[in-house]
Image 1 (spheres, rainbow, N blue to C red):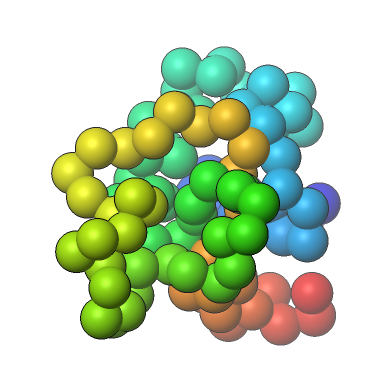
Image 2 (image 1 turned 60 degrees about the horizontal axis):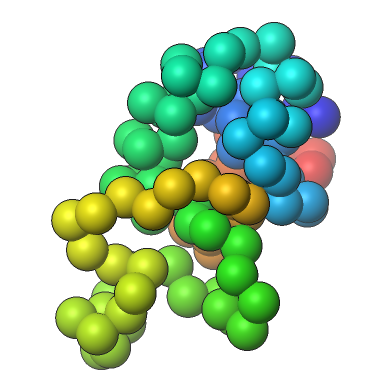
Amino acid sequence: MVSLTSPLAAILGTLSGTPRTLPELSRQLGSSPQALEGMLRTLYAGGYVQEAVQNQGDCSCNGCSLKSMCRNFGDETPEFHLLRLTERGEKYLNRLAPSL
């Protein structure tokens, strides 16, 4: 796990390389699931994290011509079962900590 000062960046660093569940994130970051859910909703809305779903590929709903039909895009935030970084999240994390 990367040591980053921002709580949102710490979540991104924890998700780097390996999808994680909310309880795993909670244990690794020493934060309550309730507190993490609010931050995850922010990261999800910004396109930095998404549910890790089989056959999902690299979709991060950033400019895709099919986003109006995509189940990962919309006003509803999914329940966070298993999360991973999107391409946008990886790029942002690499700008913060290029040694990853």
